[in-house]
Image (cartoon, protein in one colour):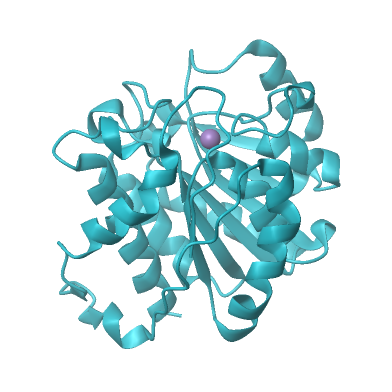
Length: 269
Ligand SMILES: [Mn+2]
């Protein structure tokens, strides 16, 4: 389902991303030779775009709109839009103290709530909603991209995070597996927030927040594939792409590849 919400700190056109990602998908094959698997056999349904104009309004609107699709499907992907859709997406999964969250993001997204509900504070808003910090794992956090007070909020809340340099040094697979095991012991449903700005800037020029030193596309694809396989993963979002700033369609092709990897993971359940 497309959720073209545009409630960003900086002006942009993330609302154009659902269409651009759908277009990018047409340039891929549904077949993965390595696993001898065809995602077109999965029964994927496009629920169209859901229009919401403000992040505050989106909480009730998205929760209502997701009820039927969630009942009818093994897993859902939300095509943002900006990162403000993560809060309503998580809330749609039911009792918040029974939900786990993994973010792939260069940023904590823990900005102060006095700014209103925006793309810079969905995780802070979720803590405020009652999501325990111990049920949040953030992977791909970048140096020199986050303010000290937000690092302090993460530590105080008990949020576990894995920095981009650690991913480069140690690989991403076991960090993702470990996060899924830890969360699945405590929760009924897991939400994956895929902020494409977690990628190195050269692979995600259309994300305002991407910086050099971020994750490589194959690392993110491996991570998303693993998440798709886990039976408690019910929803994933793909956010923060302003297609007007893309170069050679690199960002939207990466987003589409991640969507396909997620589908392949679900197929492998
Ligand atoms: Mn983000």
